[in-house]
Length: 105
Image (cartoon, rainbow, N blue to C red; front, side, top):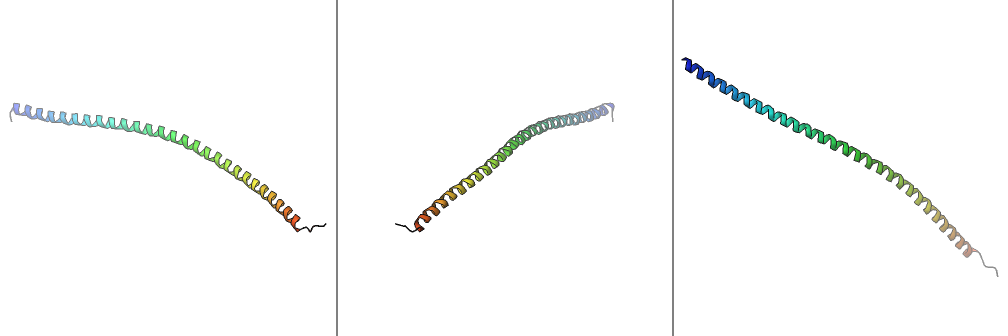
């Protein structure tokens, strides 16, 4: 092998090594971009999660208030029904009492 052949062979090996290095640098750059994009997505998901957690807390608090109001309304309705039933029962008893009493004349 002549000196020129050795230089050409070394030059080709150097060129292949530089091509491999360039490809590795390109892959690393793509990986870095992909990592940065993933970090951005993770940050966005974290923000969304925080917002959703806040909305869930508000919804849960509203549900508790509605449940409390529902119980209060149910108690008031029950009391009103009992009062009205009592009044109606009293009128029926009074009406029956009048009918059952013989007339004295």
